[in-house]
Image 1 (cartoon, helix red, strand yellow):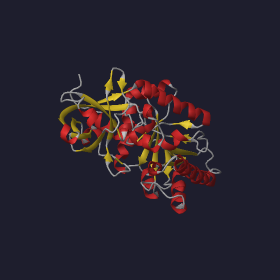
Image 2 (cartoon, helix red, strand yellow):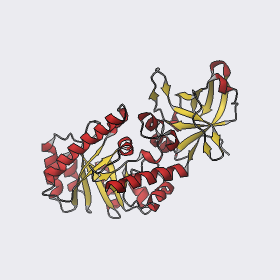
Image 3 (cartoon, helix red, strand yellow):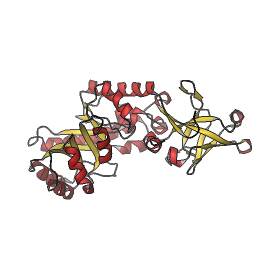
Image 4 (cartoon, rainbow, N blue to C red):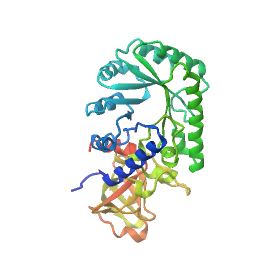
Length: 350
């Protein structure tokens, strides 16, 4: 019985989403290293493993340790290395093949003096997202990192990695693929510069919208999409998935109904859905679509219904007049989240 916000997962949709990306990676002849930060689930991980996936990406040392404890032994931590976790990194690298991310000569130098086991080193490149990473033109800094990593016996220079998060602000498929192609050009230019000395280096690319929309990903050596396993309302608005591809919903009890203002209040707020929203064309904020729950999942979104605001535990749902009489306190509705990564992370303890 559902009596509080509960994460619902459609196994059939998850399997279909994974299978589609696995097949695309095979057609493109690229390494498939999916990002596990979206689901953070051993069970979902097993679905990947059954489809032949052996290499994974995570976003923290603790997440790497969690999946290593469940049999994953080839892990990239796609987050700038946290030097305060060097002891944990050393413990982990004794058990698994571990790749770390650096974006400064300083961090690389500090690692060189503290790593105890062979560890892969990727240089993170910023192709326009401006979150972390070196710009492609910062050759002096890149040279220094390569020099350090290439001369330390327990460091293996793996190549260049980026996350094209700027696709989330793109307007349509053409712009998304343009961002991807630009990233490929810049990563490959760097790879070619150092390939003579390091013939095994690769380019590693992570991004769900472009990996979903592109038919051919062979411009890269490795892809690391993550959100595609669940997708979400944001991905739908970008155009990288259909509504039927969204594989998660949050079941939320209805606690109040206000026909006079065409609103219902649900037990499901920012601590369950996150504060991520989409700014719609008419100016309102959309924190999620509203669906009816069914015996085998959920319906298409209720036309005109959406989560209009969230506080810590409350969610306010705008509900058109012609539908609001269907609901009463004690009912349960489903919410398709705007950002499934955040929602799944918030709900994983429930």
